[in-house]
Image (cartoon, rainbow, N blue to C red; front, side):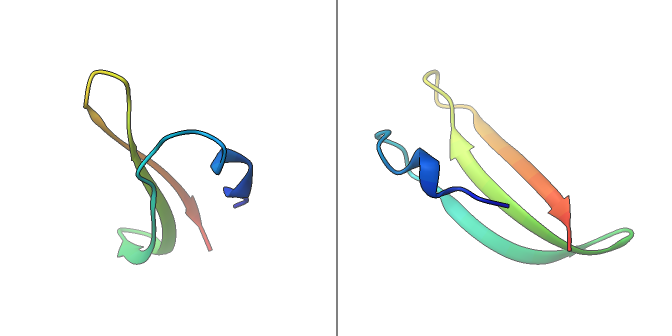
Length: 44
């Protein structure tokens, strides 16, 4: 998952590898303009 194209935005982004129900995941966490936490994940 490519996230370097988000670098120009003023965001706090966390890139984390973790384990989900079906195996390993790579998750990216960020906050929307209202402060809500958003997770985008992909199986690796």
